[in-house]
Image (cartoon, rainbow, N blue to C red; front, side, top):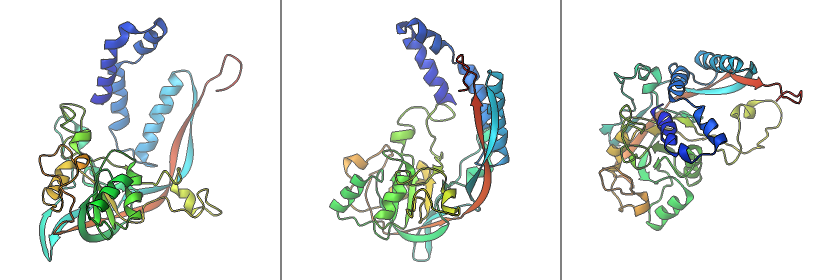
Amino acid sequence: MMRLAALFASATVARAALSPREAVLMAAPSTDRLERRLFDLTRRDHLMASAGDWETAELVRAELEASGFDARIEGVPVMRHLPTGAPRLDAVKGDRVLFTAKLSEPILESDPTSDNRYRNHTFIGYSPSGDVRARLVYANYGMPSDYDALKAAGVDVSGAIVLTRYGGCFRGLKAMNAEARGAVATLIYSDPEDDGFARGPTYPDGPWRPEDGVQRGSGQFLSLCAGDPYRLYLDGPSPCGDVNYVPTRPVLPISYADATLFLESLGGPVAPEAFVGALDLTYTLGPSAYDARLHVETNYSRGVLPNVIATLQGRDGGVH
């Protein structure tokens, strides 16, 4: 919310150089209205095809209708994917647990919406359930070129759990690239160099991600085939053919506070400069002398997604 407001606030600086038409357009957004609308849309759980999702869709439909559109909500069958239990991530050596990731976002006194049941359920959409134990390797952004750099350094990711950071490519492609190279699971964190204190003040004091913040989202292999994976389970041919485009091995997002525990104890060759983020530690590649042990618990279920459709009568008599 604060990031969005800041973007529009900064736009006022350049308004003096705008044309008359551009000035009219830029005068339309209101930071106060944007903050109110964003609060309305984010103050409740609204995961796909949930009751909160339908409530949020109705807010959007009503707003469009009040603006002069003919608006309706169409139900679309989808395959939902949600956590059914809290994940767990440990560093273990033999039978001994060395440390355990928190995998939890704190409740903020200044933000009542932060007291949310999913703050203890970090997850990636379409990640399968699984229990995995393996050595850990740091793979930077998880791009093909990063795996080339690991190979050049003599680090093998086959059979390992890879730790990657957000940025460079879509999160689903990080999982896809890891699987293609034999990794048994993928962890993804937000390095503060890309989204955190190195960029500016962190939430709630600023727009950037705090140390315990976790980015969730879809893990689909979107470069192979986009759209709802539900289509894979329908009768008849899939529009993607026989290609699998969801992960087959566990994927979990973590905070940079949790990633720090693993990165500062990883060991192995010192990472190339391109792999280095903003955490106060020496970035290394691994493999770790300990094992990372990961538990992910998720489930698929069918649901109905609200799709808001709005049309407007044009001056030419057509509906747009």
